[in-house]
Picture 1 (cartoon, rainbow, N blue to C red):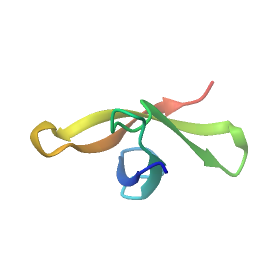
Picture 2 (cartoon, rainbow, N blue to C red):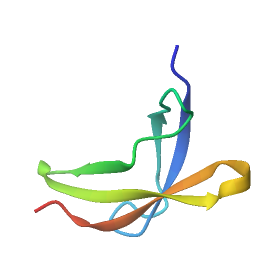
Picture 3 (cartoon, one colour):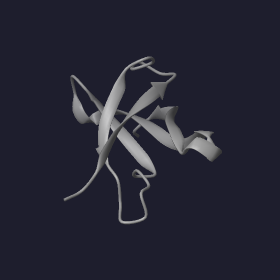
Picture 4 (cartoon, rainbow, N blue to C red):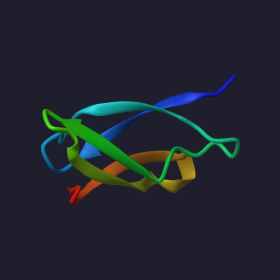
Length: 68
């Protein structure tokens, strides 16, 4: 059974929202998150994983821009 975690989105249209993602076998979330807008994947906002606090294994997704 996979574990999951809620991660904060920082920047972009979804700033301040959280997403629930599954952790891989090493206990890490996916490297990117595509936040879908009203246009679906074509209008998605891309967020990249970064460590908020490495020692406590806390993460956040930082906005990098729209999908092109």
